[in-house]
Image 1 (cartoon, rainbow, N blue to C red):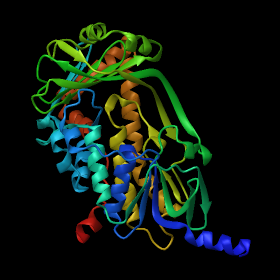
Image 2 (image 1 turned 90 degrees about the vertical axis):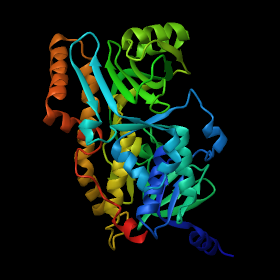
Image 3 (image 1 turned 180 degrees about the vertical axis):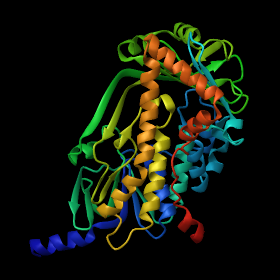
Image 4 (image 1 turned 90 degrees about the horizontal axis):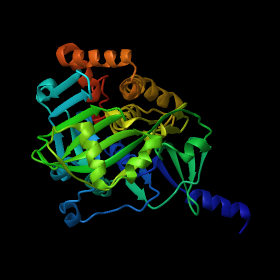
Amino acid sequence: MSATSRSDIARYDIARYDIAIIGGGLMGAALALLFCKTLPGRRVVLIEQKALESASDQALATPNFDARTTALAPTSAATLRRLGVWPALAAHVTAIRRVQVSDRGHLGWVRLDTDSNAGEPLGYVVENRALGRALTDAMLACEGLELKAPAQVQRLVKRQGGVRLELGDQSLEAELAVVADGADSPLRRQLGIGEFSKDYQQSAIIANVRHEQSHGETAFERFTHHGPLAFLPLGGPDGRTSAVVWTWPSLQAEDALALDDQTFLHHLQSEFGYRLGRLQQVGVRQSYPLRLCLAREQVRSGVVLMGNAAHFLHPVAGQGYNLALRDGLRLAEVLQSAGAGGLGDLALLQEYERRQAGDQRNTVRLSDGFNELFRAHEPHWILLRNLGMIGVEWSVTIRDAFIRQLSGRGSRRANPWVRLAQDS
């Protein structure tokens, strides 16, 4: 057999898909399920570097004090409901019905509750292991969705009508590659797409903390001299555990991690106060460096960057995962109108970018502005932020606008469910 013949056979053996999602975790899984549900008849493949974990029901039922969590905006919860994963999450979700924001040592503070949000929760906190399991189970049941895990894309090559992805000993082709492989995206670098990066010179310390009193489904955002400090409620309405995210200057974060538990709790109690009574126990502490990272291009012909590969945000407003889900909704909406040019048509992807630009811009400004405003110690900045908090507390107009942005309703929402509703 000639070399040409072998080459032709290999070419015809290459699997072909409409959409290839590169990068797993909670983001890749949500995107894969979203496109599978909203684009019926399309072949979707998720390429995940790690093997898919399938925790047993018993493991999920067993309390895990150190379980990591994700904060979901109301729009994200609504999306997960439409994707059919919410029932599996119900036992692992805690609603946020009240939020208290305060500036340590100063008068400004803000109180928000369900009355400020048409009687609905202001958000939800869900265990990552439960969210991951629910998404995995839903993906396995989704017709037209294929999972390749563990597998890694080593090279992305632009070709006529789409892209070719090389996975070591195999290749596949797709009309559209959705690159969601993290803030340090290897494929973004391979494509030669630059980034705007702003090093906050801060690190986030995360841990779960048990406290004396029930949180009553209240989340706290406390601005300390170290940096923003968030307590997110866990364990249901009467829970006595909160997920803590505490921002520290990077040079001091390692010292804070090295403290014994009681000394760390003493510092935490001093900064947070006794709103939840005495802090009794802290779980495993972890930290990660904080920066703002924005891709200078999000779309090219046949390629779109999503999730942290497109924008990596400061966690102060808890917007990263929620913005990425809204991006996915918007892209699904646009892809439903794909014409003869196919899903990877540059004009189509630029239309997605145009429609979603306002939401992305406002969300980046919110998270970056919050951090910069509340880390400043100059008197005029302290006065400005406290006046702003008083304005949110007393002005219905300002408070409504603030809640709309935090809840993901700050711009016209995408509605990719029309076709799904018709087909279901």
